[in-house]
Each structure stands twice: as C-alpha cells, then as structure tokens.
Image (tube, rainbow, N blue to C red; front, side, top):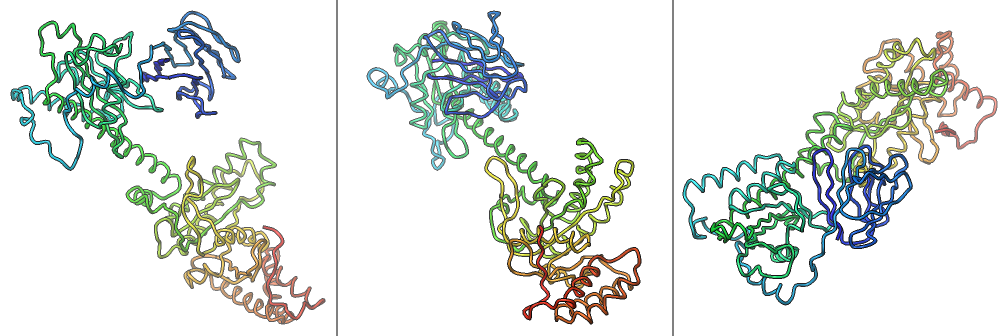
Length: 598
C-alpha cells in the first residue's frame, strides 16, 4: 500500500492508501476518488493525482491550472503534465510537502490460523462499560509506590491540560505512553477516511516499516477493550510486530461511543534483552486506558468548542449580540417551526440611475455603506438580518426567539433606516447628485422559520405568503411615493403607537387577496401632518364608496396648499377619482388597485 506523510504549517498528517488513484487538493472529494485535502492557499482545488503502476513506482499527474509540482529528485511536473517515479519520493506544492512511501501490506481480512490463536491469547485489561465499576487501581495488582503514582497522575493531568486536537496534545500523549509505562515507542492513531493514520509518535523519528499491527487494531475495534500482549504470544510472521517484545493498545471513543482512534505502545526485544521489566501489567494497562479516555474527552471538548465557535460566528452574522448568545445556549431555537413574524424588505430608490455615475468599485462601496447603516438599525431593534440581495435587505422579528412587540420593533427599525440616509448622502455628495433614499415594506403573518439555506451553507430565514407579501409591499412604495409602507396586519398590531395613514387597498402580483397598506410616517407626528392625513383618509373612504366627486373635493386642498412639494399618494388618488368621473367603473368596483409591477 502507499503511505503518505503530509506536512503543512508544522502539522504532520499520515495517510495510508490501499489502491486506486489518490488525489491531493484544496477542494472537496470528486468522482469517489480518495483524496487528502490540504488548506495551503498555493494548492489548487485539484492539484495532484497519484496512481500506483508498480509496487514501488507511481505516476504523478499535475491537475492544477496555475502551479507546477516540484520533486525532491530535482524534477518538476508542469501544469497538465505527468511523470513516473520510483518510491520513496517527496512532492513539494506551495508550502506543503508530501512524502510517498510503499509499505508491504499486512493481511487485514478475517483473522485465522496462528494470528487468531495469538490474538485470542491477549489479556483483556478492561471491558469498557460505563455502568460497571472496575474497582480501585490497587485491585489490579502490583501496586506502585506513592512516588510513581504521583508521577503517573501528574502526567495524565498535564496531557489533559494540553490544547485538545493540537499537535502538542497528541505528541504529549504519545510521549506519556513511553514515560509512564517505560515502553520504547508510543503512538496516537486516528481513523480518517476509513484508514488508520499516525497522528503522533514518540520518539519522533523516521521508521522504515509500519509501526502498528492492523490485526491488533482490528481486535480492539471489535472487542472495544484495552488489550496488551507480551513475550511468546507475539511470535508471528507479521512485519509490524517483528522485533517487538510487548504491545498494548487502547481504543479512543468519540462522544457517540464509536472507536475513532487508539493509543498504541510497544517494547522492543532489544530493550527486553537488557533485563528491564518486559511485560505490561494490568495497572499499567489501566493507565494507558486513562490516556485513551483523556484523548477521547479532549477531542469531544474540541468538537464542542468548534461547534460553539461556528455557531457563534454564524449567529453574529444575522442576529444581535444578545440573541446570538441566547441561540448559542439553545440552538434548538433554530429548528424549523411556524411562527407569526414581522418581515421587512428594503432597497435603494433609483439605484440604477445612481450607479450610472459610479465605477464598479464605487458602486460596491456605496451599497456597502447603505447596507451597514440598514443592518445596524435592524440589530439595534433586535431583528434578524435574513439576507442581502443586490441593493436590498430582508430582516424579520419574532423568530427564532419570541418577541411580544415584534411589529413595533420592526417599525422603529424602518424609521431609523430612513433617518440614516441623509448622513449617507452627505458622505457621497461629491460622487453622486441624486438623493440616497430607501423604500421599505413591512408585513406581519405566519411563516415557516428555520434554515432556508442548505447543509453546506447555513442561512436562517423564513418562507411563506407573509414573506412574499412584505416584498410586494416594499415594491408598492415606488407607486405610492412614500418611503415606508406597512400592511393592515402590521397596523393592527402596532395600533396607535405610530403616526400612520391608510393609503389604499391593493392587489399585488402573484397574490390574489387584496391588502390594506398604510404609510408609516413617524412615532409622533405634527398637528399639520395629522390633519392632512385625516383629510386624505376621508377622501379614500369616498373613493372606495365610488363617490369620486367628494373624493376630489377632499383632496383638492392637499394639492393646492403644497405647491412644488406634492404628496404623491394624494395626486394618484385624485387622478384615479377624475378618471372614474369621466368613465365610471363597473358596479363591482370596491376601491382595490391592482399593481402591475413588483
């Protein structure tokens, strides 16, 4: 079989490969070809393909589109080229070295004959059953001196304090096998891609043959126990145990109680011949098992910390700091569920015309400036940023965590967004002449909330009619000529908490049911604005009752008294009323306006 030793950024990884093509690259596995992934930025997504053509000869193909592969014999493999070389050989790609060796294969099938008899004679140190007590260490016999016990436990504690999953953690564990038991070599083995690989060794020196017995590892995996073996029981033909007097192996378990690795130690015959204690006793086997348990606990802790870190990074991209902390404590809040939510959509008004006067870099900078302001407003009022799309943003409230005042928070965030735009325009006044404004649509309703992305890329969001309607209401701000529109469903929740006026009953594209829309003006309005809003709403009632003359009469003062600064909604309602005076609508008219654009 082929044995790969990959070194990058001080991290040594060993991989065994039974047969078939083997690839090295920064991208994911493809076409079911075995692969080792290297995170070196100089390594391409698919960089090298290695195929064994004879026992000690391989073909190396350069799959990269940008970098060659250097060999330790002075040759190089150019882009798209291939070369046949004898083993051992070392490849250099960017800052990564890959040494390839050939190792004669030990029988890894079902055990039989002498091997079976040999392994059956191994002594079982501990049956790993958490529900049973193994008694005290002294019950295992051959009690050590207090000084030796102190050294053992100090070493165990030192290993446990090492950074879980780091090279030092594994190296300290391998050294502890030698220091504690007096063995000649200690290994930490991990199962990766279905293969046993050396994660760390002590002493850390080059070895010519395989360092461990696959038969022994198969036995501890099947038996889920710590095994040790000494003396004549090791007399067999296997190259991996030739010259070995004693061996001990203890399985490493993950948090799901699967065997994911092993602590492995050996004593050489040369050492045994010097008159030292050549056997492995039950107490020493217990200590090795404690080391294996420490590694398993450390890896579980590392996985938990990594998951917590990953969740924290993901949460803080979308949620306020307080909500991110709450979600980190209880990730189940992210599971898909139906909830009443308030959804907010925005986009930059006249963005296409604005971007005409900017180069691509400036356009991106402007969008980033606006998005930063909008996002900070969402966060300030405990909302969730669901998505950025072009020059727009989607946010929501009342999910994943419940918020009794979710509609009010959304409305406050929208008002804050509009208030931030003059500052953005001031920063860009030397680049653009058009005003920087946003249109905002808000709706409240039931939606399915959860991960709307994929397993590959997390994105918390919501799906459903309420979301689609909010998006359409944002589009209606262009027709109505106001910066913020809320639906009647949202208006019902906020009540009189804000200054609003009903603008129209509309039917949007793709949604048959008409909806009332309201202008969200401010938290508190002036007397003048409230008076004009009352006049407009009176005209709207006449309009919806097919009383177009009274509607025009009510609207006229709003238009005549605001020369040069007309209210678009009033102009639109006046134009519709005049149109219907000239050509009366059908008797089924109910005041609903069909919007022809999104």
